[in-house]
Length: 240
Image (cartoon, rainbow, N blue to C red; front, side, top):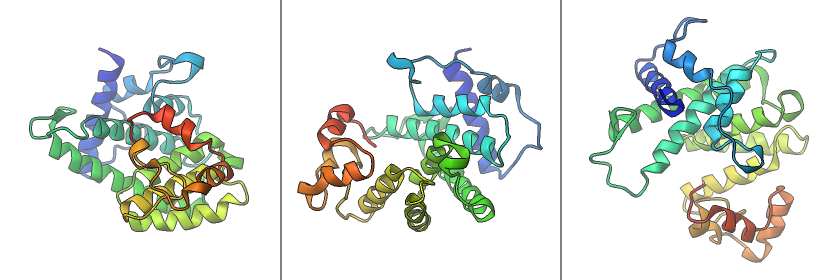
């Protein structure tokens, strides 16, 4: 069985579990899921970087020791969310009538993905009420990025706006990466049909649809990002 197929099986399980509102008892995992989590050495790209976001968070989950509260749950959520997002993007622009994703008709998969996303929204909101943010100083940059990924991929704009206000306040104290605030700000702007501030949304086709474009690179530099020209060259025709 290939590594990718093993992870697909784990996603089928996650999809069905979310749709059925079913949570396995602590310590119980299916053979397919255990195999997926045993992928400890994903293939590397030049420079030693992992090929995809979901592989990175799968590795983080597999290596998680659980020393910090909710850390392992966060990486599990991020790996599933990133893989689902990759599958959804892979069919963007195609006719979905005959597409089957994870052995499900596309629309069924889309509804399941939305259900999973909503469950992550609820989990992250509840976690933040209990312990605050997965701050860089305590949890490290990877956890900060993983929690942000769940917010960035959320379909709940009201929750994204609440999170943006929260993260903006935490940015000054170094609890979260300034890029998170920049990217979430642009994501909300795109949803509302407004101009972006940092040009991070939807790759090259919308990068220049920003307010005060003459100051775009200054704003990006303040958020720890490189010039828009470098960003566009790296993105090509990809989507954010």
